[in-house]
Length: 154
Image 1 (cartoon, rainbow, N blue to C red):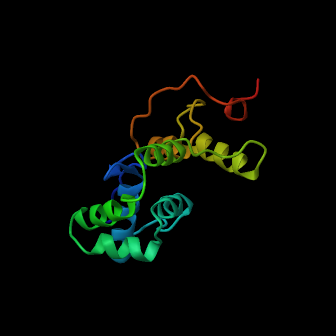
Image 2: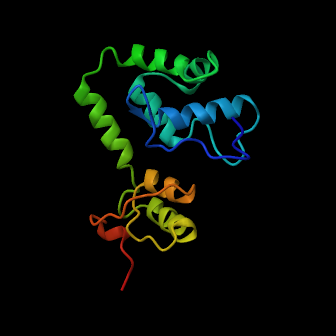
């Protein structure tokens, strides 16, 4: 995987039904190849995935590198999910896909400046996964549930 020439998979893409797993795998593979570009492996969203699975970046990377496809990651995730309910998996996926800056924090300014830079005027973008997808050229449906902190000032 060469992330100096292409994008990793979307945070919304899954491996074994788990969001962020595919993107973290792509970044891990690129990191090991020295082709990470401007991306970061073991970033905060990767760590959300690792915490949910009960693993860390080192163990996850070993699973990524254990196969040329996603099968090594599938094996790790399935083993880690064995003790989790479907509700826990759904709750994690919902939490990750809704990951946004907390109102009133410095993260809001950082997010809004990024959205201004790459969001193509989309003021309805307010989650990190949506902003990443827009930045990387993936289609993001328009939303009507934009929180007040993310709305433009009138």
